Amino acid sequence: MIDPRAIIDPSARIGAGVSIGPWSVIDADVEVGDECVIDAHVIVRGPTRLGRGNRIYPFASLGDATPALAYGGEPTWLVVGDHNVFREGVTVHRGTEQDRGETTIGSHNLFMAYAHVAHDCVIGDHCTFANNASASGHVAVGDWAILGGYAGVPQFRSVGAHAMVAGMSLVLKDVPAFVTVAGHPARVVGLNREGLRRRGFGAEAVANLRAAYRLLYQSGLRTAQALERIEAMPDPEGQLAILTRSVQASRQGIARPRWGRDHDD
Image (cartoon, rainbow, N blue to C red):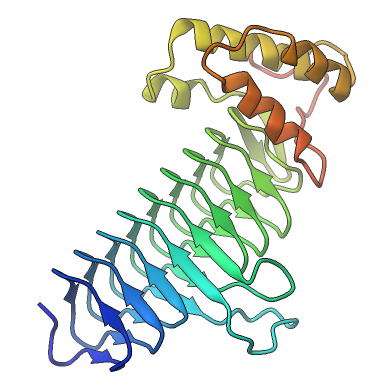
């Protein structure tokens, strides 16, 4: 299942059932997990670890060195989980010593054509990066988050779990979990109701999140006061804790509506 025209370093570790297409390059210090499918014209540089069942389409480049000027060629890592899909032209860079020394991608993510994940990012599970979506260095993206086409997240920002960044948006403030942002710069436009529906959130969970959302964005309370009220609410399934932690962890301040009230009535 490995095409003889592929260029594979003798030190690379290739798992069972792996398929590698012609003219792909698998570098030294690369580990490819079982049942990965690597198409033609793919480049995987090391040190990189790919988990099980990943699918990599033509002209993707994983594990190359970052172009960040602070990077001095030191050995750093890209670590990828299981069952991710990297479509055509996707680029993912390793970390830097100035941060974690590792770019980390979880499992079951979809990176559509020409998406980019820069150095030292931490991407959760079940995320979607639509075509040309880009996360700059040191960005954290929570589980089930979606970045629409051409969305951009500059360095040191975060996108919370179950959040939605609309296409062509520029994220200048951290995006709390469960909300939708849109625009340039990105502003909060409501709770990510469609994402909650698709993932089967129950009526009680959605109602709790809507109440918490109103406290955070529509009550006139300061953020700390709103979080105190939210933390006092019943939270049987833990979603409110995810929301509050995403706000408390913000380094850049959280995204807010353009006007005093948004459209989540």
